[in-house]
Structure formats: structure tokens, C-alpha cells
Image (tube, rainbow, N blue to C red):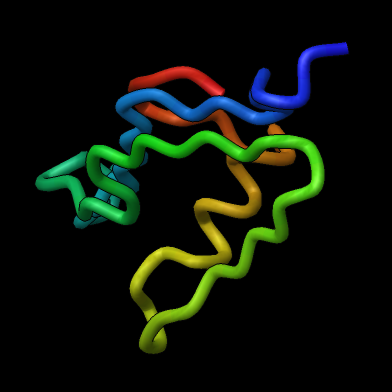
Length: 75
């Protein structure tokens, strides 16, 4: 087994949430939750996500676990 082969690869990950407004919940805008993430994790490495409140840590984690579908990019 190649020790340098990534066990997790993320390429150009973007995730936007729609902003809905009005009685019919029309989409009026989008909020960028995750924008342009590229990441490789190799066997034996430890990954930690650190940042301010609301910066996208949980959203990134959920998209890595495929609990939410990214707008763009590959996991």
C-alpha cells in the first residue's frame, strides 16, 4: 500500500445556501458557506478544523461525511 496516496481528497469544494424570502419562499440570494476548499489527507495524518463561529467548519465536516451535498466540487 502506498503511504503517500491520500485517503481523503477534496477538490474545489463550494457550498452555498439559498436565502428565501416572501410568502412563496422565492430564492433571492445565496450565502457562501464553503468556498474553494482543496485538501488531501494521507494515512497517519490528523486533521483538525479550527476557526471562528460561522466560518464553515461544521458545513465542511458534513459535506466530507456526505450528509449534505456540495454545490460544486468533489470529495
